[in-house]
Length: 163
Image (cartoon, rainbow, N blue to C red):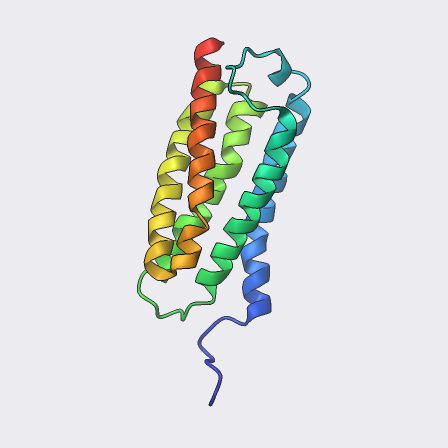
C-alpha cells in the first residue's frame, strides 16, 4: 500500500500545531505576569476566585489539548470539506486567546477583557463544533477549554462588577 501523500507529514503538522499555541501562550504571559503582583493583586475578587497558582497548570493542560486537536485537524486530507474553515477558526480563536490577556491585564481593563472573552467564547464554540464535525477527538479536546473559558468569563464579569 502507498502512503497517503496528500496528508501533512506528522512532524510538520506537529510544528504547525504547536507554533500558534506557543505564540499565544508566550504573548499572553508577557501581558499577564508583570500585572499579577501589582494591578491584579489590588483588585476585589469574588469568593470563587482560585489561587493564582491554579492558572498556570490549567492553561498548560488546555494549551496541550488545543495543540493536539489542531495537530489532528492538520493531519486530515487537505480536500476534507470544512478543514480549511476549521483551521481559520482555530487560528482566530488563538488570536483572541492572547488578546484577552492584553485587554484585561496589560490594559488594566476588566471591561475590555469581558468584551474579548465573550468573542473568544463564541470562537471557541465555533471551533469546537467545526473540529467535532471533522474529527471527534479533536472536537472533544475543546470541551475542557470551553468549560474553563466559561468559568473565566464569569470570573472576569465578577471582577468587573466588583471593581
